[in-house]
Length: 421
Image 1 (cartoon, rainbow, N blue to C red):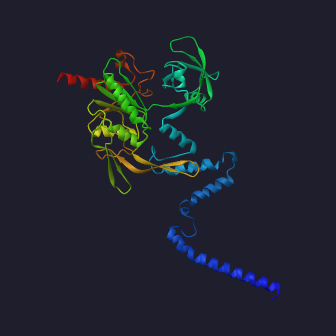
Image 2: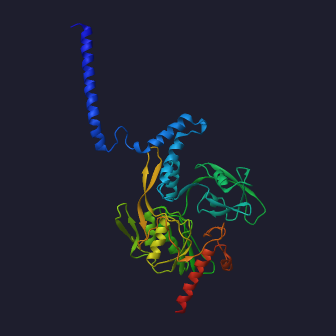
Image 3: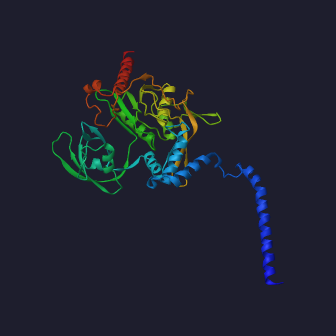
């Protein structure tokens, strides 16, 4: 056979095989799409978002300011916009890889810095909190010290966010502060080395001149229950006959910590209920060994009390263990499931709904206090171990925190009532 004919026959055979393969693919494609639930002619999921892809393509091809076209930011923005339509504004959310890492550190009670919290007071930047065992403590910084400069740059006129950004930095690096010590007209300059910090979830102090402990819970991160139990033991050893549990500005955190923290004060009962998408309800019971089931408790809440903090508060009230004072809480009542995405970002998706032990929904409703008391506009809660916390009993009636004052008054009434019986 001539070589040209041999090439022709081989080509014809290969073409015939390709035709058969193509025909088989065309014939089998509808069956495969049906089995996989894919619309004909459209990749999985694309049929529902074809308008989005059309808009995306138009932006990528035609938007005039090319420096503002950032596909990664557009992608993240689209995800956030999608989640916003689910109407779970305080819980379901998307975090970038950096944001996810920061949240994980926060839930583990870990930050990097020098260990101070700043406030603006009368135009000055003042230290409001100093973390124990931090570079700030070791350097002798105290409540009320004024920050004048950071790295020789004056902070006059700067906002707190920008100042905090100057002070923060990587572990092992240094920052130089110029300060005016509280009550002094002199200044001093010191250099501190940034290091990882353990940020306590719980801080407490005795209200001066009383036998009442004020215990503030910052969040429900890893170890919160252990810190809470330690604070309760220390308060009782100091003579506390009743306790304020301050949950104001507490954004919540870990569900397991909320359950175990509530179980500190409960010997039995239900901490919460969970309802799934099919309507099935599961009761979550008190767990662990109770520490104190009799000491009178008053809980302080506000609009920024959320998530696990709401579970904790509802559990104590519904089990007749505490009275709640303040304003209505935020209403973040969904169980968050974490889905890591391929670039390290994360989707936090509400997959179940939280109910109080009495069966009331927290989601978008929150908790209505037993006694409604609110702070004046622009005032902030006063917490233990902060600059504004009272040091003398005579300061209590005039505190710029009527919620705290009302809580102490209620404990005083309860103590007086119990002594008169």
